[in-house]
Length: 422
Image 1: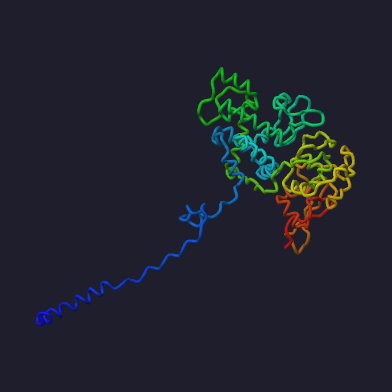
Image 2 (image 1 turned 180 degrees about the vertical axis):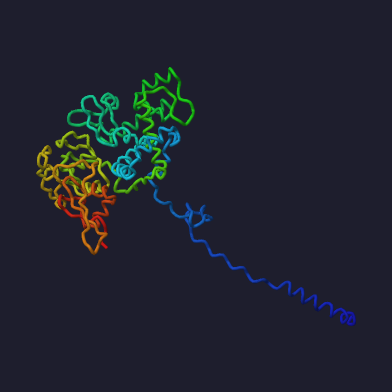
């Protein structure tokens, strides 16, 4: 046996060493770092890239509006493109017009979404009135929606010598959007809804009964209609076309700032327009511009007001004493009434006023030679911080910060910084 082992030993030793080398343990793989605790809502997203897992950015108003459009686009008809180019023939002027009425566009779109109405109809006042509060004369249409007296009665809108709800932005918008939804439920085509609004629902139904409804193409509806009615639809589709693709027409749509949003503010107790103007920091002219249903300055507010967000915030923070000594609301200088105890910080509102939709002559000028970027502005009669902010495309909060203002009230002759100091 020993002789056999000695003979095999030279062969066995290399085999044993090889076997031992093959069983040497490999270095342990580095342990994965434990995942940070996650909430139930984010567990399913652990495999997303960091970019995709970030919180969503604030929604863009114009993007939301485009998503809500339901009519054919720019290529629906050559006339649509023709009118779109007409609207934007002067790009700077078009941008200024949109900026001036943007709060009303946003408000109308919010109402359209509430009633499940196509987003294009938030732009309908552009076609009807350019969002102007057209006063009703005798049997003529009134308000930015251009509502006829008969239609107002059908919608249950109050129209009398002191108050015309066709000019009440809140009530008229709600009524129109509700009617648009009913039209669509009956007609099933948003293009026909516009035709019905312009030419009358019953007349359109008779035409459809006689000639049939429109074909399924994406152009203008091939239903007999007056030239003016067809043009009305074309214009609505044209302004929507510009919103769809503003770069195509060399224009930029203004950004929607949160200070531009209009809010309905509840009035706890009846008050005059003068008191409401002081409490909100708006001039009488601006207050009536957002609440144009009052035919005179003698109106009494009993339920609610429509105000820009900045004015709504101030209105809620600075209640006015209802028994304060306020001049007669019919006086031209009603906005110059002495401030009440609770609004002593508010400045005198301006006498008489220009329409906020008009473009006032700017008195902006360089303030210092060593600071060319610092711009100042002298407040004119009838202006408020809100109108100045909109005209110069800044926010009310920025103006208040730059000028160390505690409230949004300003007075004629007051000098404001329109840019931050360097």
